[in-house]
Length: 512
Image (cartoon, rainbow, N blue to C red):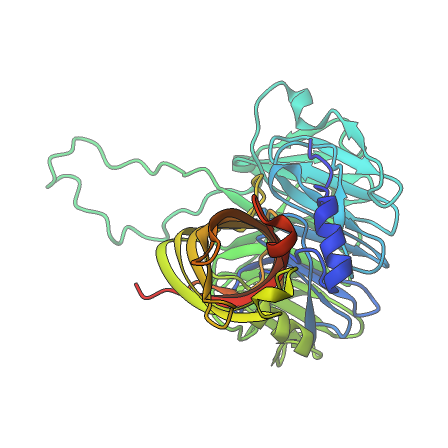
């Protein structure tokens, strides 16, 4: 089962309120990021999903906004049911939205394995099929789930790779077999793939060696390879289509009792899609084909940023939306396509929220300015000085593991040359940590820390001092970190004279 969404710390919430910054937004999309699925409704609301990525469009895929995803696992299936949106994927992860995909939260799918199908019949009725054959259904839009015996009732281990649901009808592809049910998954029957989808035989002896001259005593025997179904989909008036790895598509008009060959597609099919009641094939060369009467009619497919189409869905009228390593939209059933654009907000998110890969650095030099005001005015009031430091160790690890996402340990020295009766200096070691355990953005990351050392002046000697502080990482990229912080200096002696507030601004820059 999937646990609830992790809670942020109270400290982070307090800093967010004080600084005006929000909690970590898990925005991960970049041009070329693979997208696995897309679903649209009749209002042209579309949601696309991928590896921890969620995108939303309200204009049939012409412009997109990235949505915060509370998980980083692959979300290979999405379903749009009006304002209710579900996205499922690895490890039974299920996300739900009640505001049309503007925000998502974790939900319980009722399955533990990878979700390979998430199909909605209407705004209330949904079926989820897991890779291990578990089948769960919902009658309240995915808020609660009821398990069915699923394929486990057959008494054998299965590995499901595709499934489709249309009312009480459910078709499941497991290994090389097709299983059908007419009661929502309570009982299944197996379709004999060899009988339903006969293997192709060579049309001539071309390519065969002369078996006599090769020393054989008998002619070669043609052994029929087992057909491998790749995709299954119901469409039209309870018709059922199955696509094979040899590019053939078979259709049944009697709920799987008999199948007939419709056509051999021009390329290997990746999936079959039901769009506005019609059957569409998505092929690995980036093209699409729509079943019209007894034949498929091919389209050129969408030109994506890179790679081919992985999924296609339809909105209102003749609109289509295609995703893969890019985004594309069509308003003429695929005859022509335009590139989907990430909105201005999405571009800003891509610029600022997309983090560098996790990194570790050692011995990173830095420096900055510092202001310190001792309680006693005899030192000259507010003192302005400079800071030199070196980060002995620094990391940025943005993931869901426990612990801070950013951390460093530094050696530092602050010098205030204008102090009376002579220069005043603070030197020691410090550590700084982020409040958040995952901060996948490049700016405004709240931090806290502590510095321990000594405050020295020739007139007073050296006294122990510590400086607790809070701050913000204004910039956090692999080769540059810019931070502002403020706190209070506390000493072990002459406390009434030396204690006081301080503020600093510094930058660390990687030279190697």
